[in-house]
Length: 137
Image (spheres, rainbow, N blue to C red):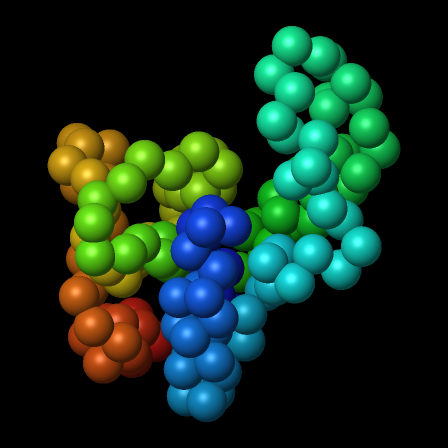
């Protein structure tokens, strides 16, 4: 199954653990956005007073890469930590997945939000693996 992992750069260590685990089970990660692969806008995000962030071609490339990653995936998994947190880009990717009719899962603890109602919530990697297995059948 092709999986898109949605999260934040602050969660990359956990995202990498989830990605490795899922790949060992035979799943494919659609986009490893955390590996940056030459597309890194983190240093430009801090300037909230300038529109130059959105005018940078790299911003468009990142958007298209991640949009295609969600579109080409079979499922989306939001990777959260132990403490509920707000997500920005991950919530956009989640919304795209919902609009495309993709099954959505989470691992970790999400903040309480009615928008997360459709997600199959998992606390452990083994729970996530089982939920994905059931999705495949």
